[in-house]
Length: 111
Image (tube, rainbow, N blue to C red):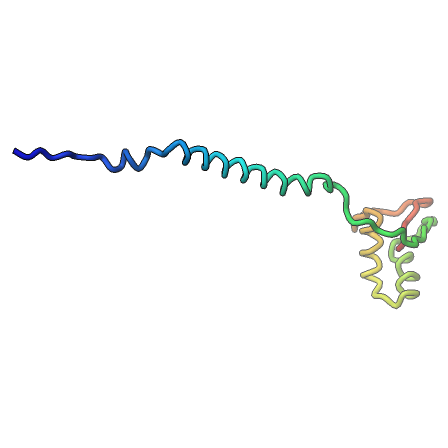
């Protein structure tokens, strides 16, 4: 009578040799090292933006009853710009909101 041997091929496929385990570990370590180097190159530059040369700024001291529109009008006329663009630029440079009131003596940076 013939006997038949049954092999479980899935079990054999799951078992890896010692060389395979070492190779997989080496690839994993190299990959982790590569990712670390890649991520590490940008860490030293966090918070450092491009260097900007010192630009010329004018400081305007607000007088009693003066509005942002009054200040921007003379700047826009001198530059040949739309006054709305100048107002927006002054607001951005000074952290002003549309509804902020100017106070006499307040210093406004004009770039």
